[in-house]
Image 1 (cartoon, rainbow, N blue to C red):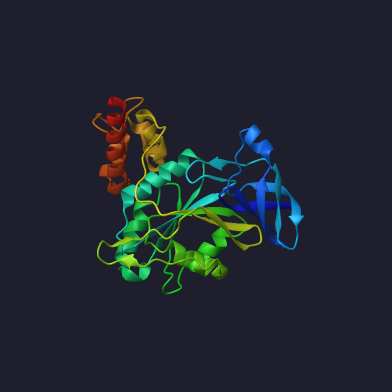
Image 2 (cartoon, rainbow, N blue to C red):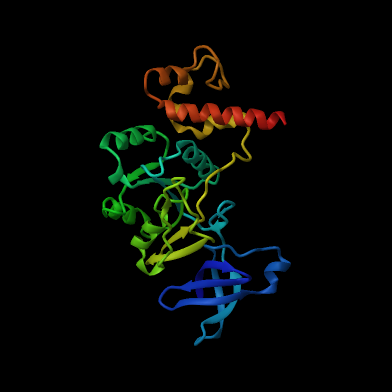
Length: 292
């Protein structure tokens, strides 16, 4: 019997078999011996111990398409990163870090700004402009007003999607809309600090339809750039690419060099200042990391 691991807790793996339900399984010792750890999202073959109690063993880990490090998950098709358009105000530096993290792992990204009912249309247009050329698709939704959600649902169909974002942006509310049976605890945003309480405590894959899974992850509030050389950083900003051929120097870092095509494009309004500011901050961060 084949299924997909949707949760792993305390040595037990919960395997969803479409049309049959969820089985509580132990992994065979051969995985420890071969130093293979089953991950949420793994496709597996299981043998049943008790059909009535829905228990079994994980016998075979089927080949993985990919394996993410953060969050630890396998066979992910895309990432949906959710930020609030307001309350809390979106931390775009954090969003840019997440985009780099997913690019490193070669995972396409959908960016969804929730709570659009709390901001003026001009602010939504500003957010659209910032990310228009960054290589990801930008969506706008309001779970509270039930707008924009069908577009999100269509883009998730038939795929395994990891959803991530800071706490308090409406990830759990979005999950409840997509799959009401998930019955996730929804945490209210703390008015005192305007930051969400952490309501998702472990990585769990939620089945929302045929061949469609949704991987909810604990909310993050920080991300560090890892395994990136300073010289490689510009390769994570796709909006720079069309203008780099105009740079006088090969290997231009687009900072203090003269005749830089990227800085010219920035001055012409073809690259958004918000993204360029993130690039400068990340470059400084990587430079300081190397120093120590």
